[in-house]
Length: 206
Image (cartoon, rainbow, N blue to C red; front, side, top):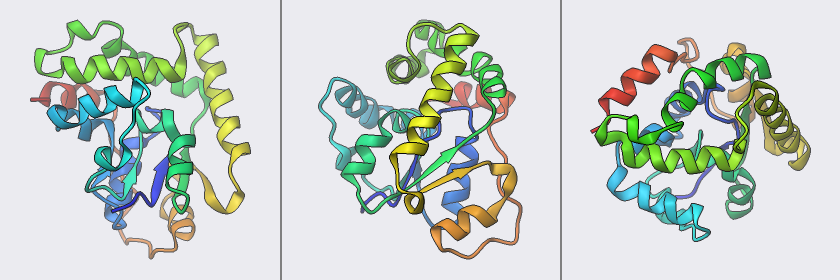
């Protein structure tokens, strides 16, 4: 299999909703941090190797035709080059709302991975490496919102328009289905991974 859709949006930009949407459209199972968390023995070492500079993309994405969220979003350029036929979706929201969300979810987990439930510590350690590779070590609101803006601008200006969709999930199925040339489902676009669901998912990691 090869990756057909790459998500360049950082975590907490509705990446889990995009995952569910892509799976509904036939681009699943979609690789996402929750998939890594539920297959830690195989995927955490592979992603740690990638973070060390030795990626094995075919092994990481074995069985996937789409990939979103961190760690993927931190490697969107490399993946876009490695999978030259893949289309890229940048999920977006305002920097202010993104910061409010990530500061109450992901940053609380990766700030001290050893405080995560024991089964979740390997993926939490790897997640800290992956996320800080993108956002840096200064987690002040000003610094993080600045990095977020820089990231979105880099994605927007680095890809040909026909290869990139800047996507706000509130716009529903039409933009993404037009972009991927697939029919739109009759049901609403998924909305998932609110803060309560995020921590429930953490508790479910085995």
